[in-house]
Image (tube, rainbow over all chains, first blue to last red; front, side, top):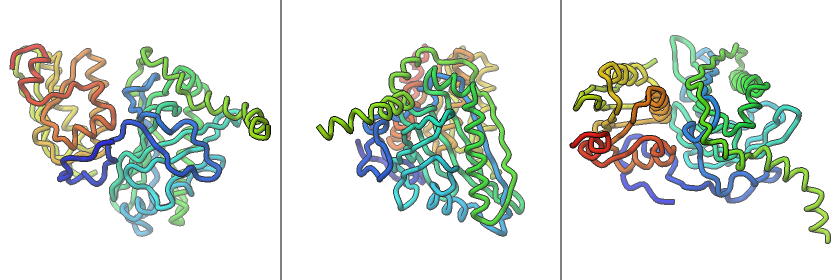
Amino acid sequence: MSTMTDDTSRDAESWAKPVTQLHIGDVPEGATNINVDGRRLTSPIQGFGKMWQKTYTVAIPSALVSPSELIATWKARFPEFWPAGNRFYGPLTGIAPGDVALLSMTLPGRMKLSTGVMVLYADERSFTLMTPQGHMFAGWITFSAEQVADQTLAQAQVLMRASDPIYEIGLALGGHRQEDVFWVRTLSNLAAAFEHEGAVETSAVCVDRRRQWSRWRNVWQSAAIRTTVYTVSAPARRLRRRG
Amino acid sequence: MNEPATAAGVREVAPGVCVIDISGDVTAASEQVLVSAYTVATERGAHAIVLSFTGLEYMNSGGIGLLVMLLVRAQRKRQRVLAYGLSEHYRQIFELTRLDEAVGIHDSEAAALKVAGMKG
């Protein structure tokens, strides 16, 4: 890791410090750190599948919450808004640039997936999580809020490619739908925190229909495969520890 | 949506090579300005697009996302994208987001133009 040498930019404090590999310190109870430590971050450029920009928006009356209040709440209570069956093991202090969080996700077929994210950027109006190698998708999610007329618009916007061919197939076979449900529920839960029941609007744009076949080898990093192997081999590990 | 505080002028420095001078703030609100500049460069037949960031004052993650989208458009048209004028801070952000693996980053316009296929 190196340090910023030019931190006079207005945004300097909002960006994570440069890292070549992710590192997790203490692993929270219940979390699994098999797919994060030592992994590199991946942007959509490093992904395999079609590139998508998916946007989820909910409007909340600004009389209930301002954009900066909404983002402050979202950052402080981020894990609370996730749908049941999924866990975000982030720092108790909330979301800050450079933080690395472990995730436990439920995939179709009740398959479990352990992965993580890093907070790439965070300011008063937005924050962005970027994925590591092996995550379902290569890219980032930006959470933001802005005032439009008398509404505070809360938005989650995903810019991503499926990381490898297996995830790409999974997205086509219901993964996209499951992701839509995930973020719609998250935004509904966020709105409910301000005692508002708002309809979540969803849009998906295929930014690039081409698949990056040169990236098929990303499959070797697949968190889904590694989590499955880890789960299946748990009894053998327990036996070895006893012996 | 707030008014974008971005400016992007297009200079055709040689046949097939255009420089887009980006100044001000680059955020998600800069989309129209940057896409317009890219379209002008493309209509002038650019096979290489050099992004000048010497006037860049501020960029958030929305701005980085916009650059990725611009890169995809360029790749689709088989255009090469290069950049120069990034401060150390923004160079590190390009490295962090691994945008530097797809955009050739150079110290000066002359160096970028040399790689783009013309003498600086």
